[in-house]
Length: 175
Image (cartoon, rainbow, N blue to C red; front, side, top):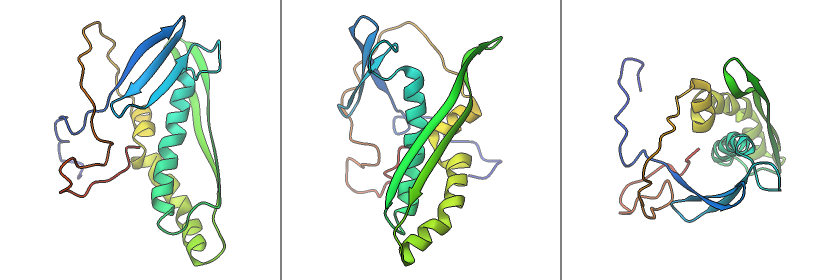
């Protein structure tokens, strides 16, 4: 999209959501529209805290994009990633600073592995600058509205990247 173009209006095809229900004291369950479930806690048990989920989302988003691009050349031989940052409280309230994601990956020897190693630096820059939806949302600072109201049942939907008609090619990454 050129800089002068106006982005399309959000519609049903751009909507992403998760529902949250309480499982017990200081414990919740996030459910996506495909039926996936993830426990969330306040840090008193092994469940991921919301901050840890943000870090996981940053690393996971980058991992999906990295795999989609380098995987066209060669699969990972080894893969590890760490997302980290510092939780602070200041005049702006509670927030994370110094966010970073480190990818420790290797590729097999040979032509495909060489091609994957060659595109790795550029791919990481593209992930940071435009590909990772989670990282871009954090970097751009989109406001979040916290409101009281009814939560409507949206029902199940196909996985992101799946055209329910089977007629249109789609990008499988929802990162």
